Image: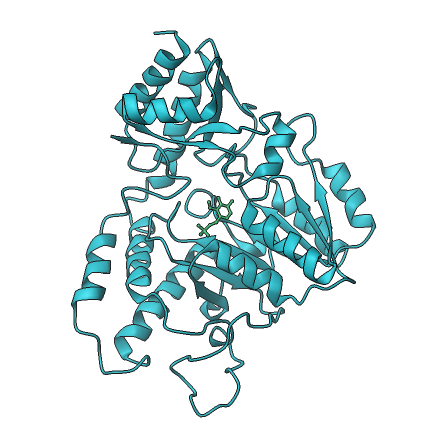
Length: 377
Ligand SMILES: Cc1ncc(COP(=O)(O)O)c(C=O)c1O
């Protein structure tokens, strides 16, 4: 099997992840209760390593969550958006941003403006500027598209957003682990991220960075393992935004993944992006195969989307998996609006996404498989 579906979830995980998860489940927990030194140290280590990746000074501003969807909801609901508020976002967003926004609009009348792509396939900065002229409470932007891999120029977007007085939310689900995600440099007040994609950790892990000047309302309150004497949920970060028993085995695995990705042999991102380039180069030469958004000037994470003449994307994905053992993903990839902008609506694309562990031989075999589908081999 050739696994090229790492944008959905990474496989294999980073060395050390499986052992860390297993140990967290098989080793006896520390003294009873959530304040066990062992438990806290796993979470604290995770927070410290993430703070290091994000170049953030205070690890307490990192809230640990079950993943990006949770983090984005926590940010959007926690800002208390109502009818008087306006959110400017982009067509590159995943449903984990779009759907909470649509729900906020339905439930509270929050207005939403969605900025599209320019002729060059990048976000249309002029239309973005115009959208901000009508006022914005929040600008929510995807760092890297999970359909095209293109990295949005969020530093520029967020600088304009701040000038307009808006708070900024970055969806770093596809970028963290592949390209630098430094909130301070990017001007991101909130950064949602996930552990199971580019960080090569377990599913059910992730987090939300919250700028020190920003307070969010908790989405959940309850047990925290600390300050049980208080009637109300503790107000200090990160406990303010964390309630219930955390996914300790998951975070033990994520800490192992972060240790590996920060280690001396940290070749992961370079390998994954070289493999994606090789894949693009191979597919580009095939007659009957159209790469979707193939501008070589764009910065990208390792995601490659295409369509094959004469094949529906679902049939092509099925054939790649069943006849050639190439695991891919086909369809809209939970990001409906970008397909309208790219002309791949309503069926979407076939998507291949290599990782740090993909080999040149696997890429050659995947290109050969697509060539066979397209009738060029
Ligand atoms: C751009 C983007 N945002 C959000 C998500 C949701 O991430 P999670 O699986 O951690 O909830 C994904 C995952 O597919 C994604 O690609």
